[in-house]
Image (cartoon, rainbow, N blue to C red):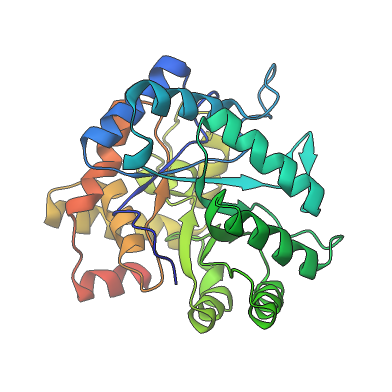
Length: 302
């Protein structure tokens, strides 16, 4: 089980260097810290998909912010290895090089949580377990995470680590939210068996669970195409009505209710969500004070 204290919300860093420039990112990070936030999630690949970027932009912005504010000891930092164009996969040599790259960009000597961003079936799991344990023993990494792993592969990796007395993963990061519930079938029971916690993404379903996407409404957003696909399922349209009712009962927003539902799921360490501006962040932070009743949780889940 993890010893990390994430707080009620984890700030996603995928927007830094993509939809938020340096100054906007600093403003979001300042506001998050001022509001009592502490856990920030990024990856070495963020945001290599943007024209002119090479990957590592998010880490570099986050590192510059921590150094300029002197706040490294006040935050929990998670990043990931596998997907950077120049550091692909989970081979031991690549993981060793990638972690040093990330530490340099983040301007820190240790990561609180280091994820394998994807599974790598070309590398023996014995090697993966050994190199992540090596990083823990060297003090470069506090805890190990897995992201986007199939349950069977997760079980075998943890079994290998346990049998060899190596550091075992504590955390899994996977697709899970009110409208993406596949994790409930096999993944979450696997985490319960293994003693891992879940950090779900995208907690607001690419914006759909903010409530701004409705039938007949056009939204100007880079994620509008993804979010709009949820409207094709009548159950998701019906969910918006329930979210509206629950939000009204609490005097809050649909986004806050959606995040509160996730936060109150048994294995969830904290929901993961990103913000482009301090104004968007305020909508996310509103979820911190929302405690849903058992009836509301059941109604939303249904």
